[in-house]
Image (cartoon, rainbow, N blue to C red; front, side, top):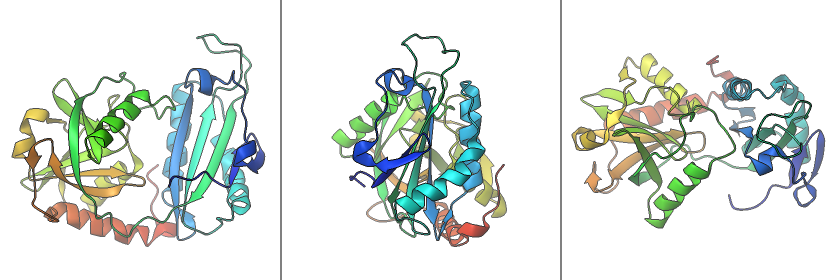
Length: 290
């Protein structure tokens, strides 16, 4: 998806993307002082919409931006209609910054948040058939990765390193433990036990991550929220990535260690992909995580 959207929602007004303009003093532009959220519409309904909007609200509260997320429920349909995407599969991007104020590091007292959204046509595959090669990098980001902030330079740099090395993703390592990837969560499987890093300040608690954990409980699969040490990768049987647009993607190789040859995929990875696909087909009837 390399094109621009047709329309942009900006502070209550919907305009052509070429006419969407913000002040150079918007704190999102100067400081990356804002929160974003991404969700996908499938079969005319946003997949786990309540969970995505709840995370947006939680992250805004974590950085003390006052905004009523409930307002978006009336505005999103307006944007979709203007974008000719009502009831069509699409991706929705939402961003809320602290707004416009003279540049200073401390929070301004009376700034109004800047609200920006856009939607673009995007149809996810039934099952992500990627069998990814990934590399590992030291996690040099700050220690509040649980906040879905717009200032993503560390993630961007890590993902660019992956692209330069013809890899799908970069797994991040903090104090010898694999935390997450540049824009995905990561899971491992050993002896039919599924491992993933706990949802603390070192990872973003992805909505798809939460869905996979719920699927594991439904399927009576044992899960341990424990980070896997980098030096134990070779002991793992399977590994996979999760994310809103990634869905569930098998990892074939990490650095020089290969899990599978060719197009092979681990048994539990494939099982979870199948169950995730079934859940998407019930997109308008999914349970609430919050």
